[in-house]
Image 1 (cartoon, rainbow, N blue to C red):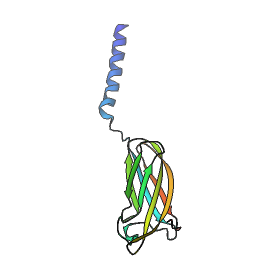
Image 2: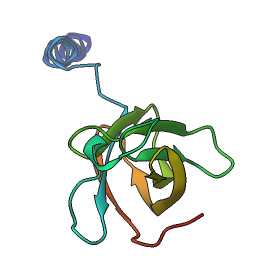
Image 3: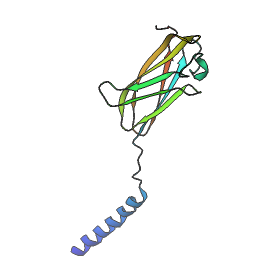
Length: 136
């Protein structure tokens, strides 16, 4: 009886052993976010080419969680996308704004917002359409 138990235990050990060597412990636990900011009227991406004044080119994007530690801020690239990642899943709010200028003087801004759920190991797309309304 002891011999059968020993053989069974040995067989079980050697059947599980390869799983330890061939399985990966490098699971991607980051949460990725791609925020696409577009113009309400034209549905074109808001890129650096859309700003005509001094300062930051492109739309400023802020990602945050009410009362939480999740926070990121950046500017859309030439494709109108701001990308970032977080180390944990969360539900985040995203705001975008585009500063408008009259020559060198600020002339208000256009805004938009949305919210998304960040998922571990996935890239979540978010789209913000900037209102044609100008806020002063």
